[in-house]
Amino acid sequence: MNTAEFYRTLLKYNYSNCPLNLTVSKNAFLSAIKGMLLSILFIGSQSYADREGSSPVLGISGEVLSFVENIEYDNTLRTGETILGASLRTRVVYRPEQRFRFSAGFFGRRNAGDSRFLSSSRALIGAAFFTGNFTFTLGELQTPDNKEFTDILFKSDYRWNPGFFEGLELSWRTRLLSQRTWIHWYALNTPSQREHFALGNYSSITYGVYSVRLSLIADHHGGQLYAPAGDPVRENIAGTAGLELNFPFEKIISGIKGMAQVAVSADRDRSLSSGFKNGYGFTGGAAVNTRIADISLNWFKGEQFKTALGNPLYGLSSPYYILEISKSFSNSLISADGGIRFEFIGSDLGEYLKNPQHRWWLSLSCSYYSFRQKLPEDQGTKKKSMPKPFS
Image (cartoon, rainbow, N blue to C red):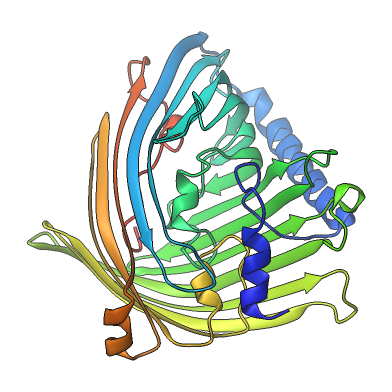
């Protein structure tokens, strides 16, 4: 299967229920779950005796996000579209004591022009356990952000479309180290849909201006029992490893950043006997953050690289250049973000001017918390605006 056929196969399906594709063996999948559960039980057993008593807290939280995104592509890998819409998240949050949090609520999204009352809706149910620098979450999860998973591994528009993320997660954060491992379910294996889930891991070490980042997403599209005839189980594993430099300033230019990464992938179709097909790529870039705008220039060159959840244009063998200009603003209640991204495939500027590949976006969001001050673990649940380069 060549690159174009790979992405056309992905685009055939209705990703409102499941926008991913990876495959890990079931033994490995169960082992990952067991490992996460054993880890949190061990952590809890070590700290339960030191738990400080606290009064129960009951409150509400909610976020409203409005967005518009216009994608203009002229290739076989990704289609152009314009999406105008809004989403709402609202929850009742209960903390019986300091280390536990339970929440229940509602998510709804409506795309302009849709004849339905809501384009999609879901119940939001979650529980979390906190101890020291560790957090274990079950149910509603924080959507991956661009700092952890770049456009290579996780497309930017997945952050508001479909707009929800659910599964289980174990995270650990200190001043120098950050570790996050999650399993996300997109679809159960039923007669009306195929099994679909993904496993992700992000690790980073930061010291001064240097940051080493490791990211991986494994996507599984299984469900042999209910799969259409001729449509096999598909698996994709893609990851990046790289170094980032961040030089802060306090004048008109607030920061200069540089990045270099290597990307690898493994993809297979179980109907074939050839096993996994490997791909690789290299990417680098620089960003300048100013008071007026944030500007970045990135490049990517790959060979048979395939990513199920990332921007499919990274699967091209031609050099891929990205110029992005954006600006964001946020405070405790309101955030706004907008920008434009120009994408050059190959190096022929004349051909690009004939068929420009670009996307622009604008998002506005407002968050509300009834607590006297926002709880630390709730800061990551706020709906993020479209990410700026290397943010």
